[in-house]
Length: 196
Image (cartoon, rainbow, N blue to C red; front, side):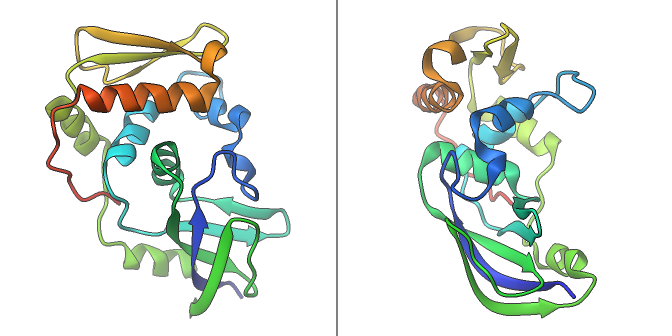
């Protein structure tokens, strides 16, 4: 029987326990399972880079170790901005922690733990909300060039390109941090919406 514990997860890239957050797995988030381009990752990460996270991320610990979902975009956006402890729901058959993950009191036990977690959410964000936020606050296009020369765009709704960042020169995490930091300097001061 799965149990849900209140806990936290430190936002480190790479993370000591969550293998989802090394450079290779971050690069893979730009593509879907068929290898086609998946749009919107840069915008979603930037949204959470700029906005506070309100709802805990979910970490399921099973025989393969800890795995974070949902909450990937919240984690990545926050981790690119700063190292902090994000609130987390830890789902496991017993109370356990891992490097960079703390586990506190049990708050739920049952087979429908995912439904219980969904009922705890204070808000939901949608692609349309992110697109509207980007159009209101980000004035330029910002480009990220991957090692294979594919180019992904932060704020594809803008016409003028501010700058291109090359992963080959800075590494993926370094390029993202530099791009987001530079973008913030040219962003209309946002009235930060609540984010999930």
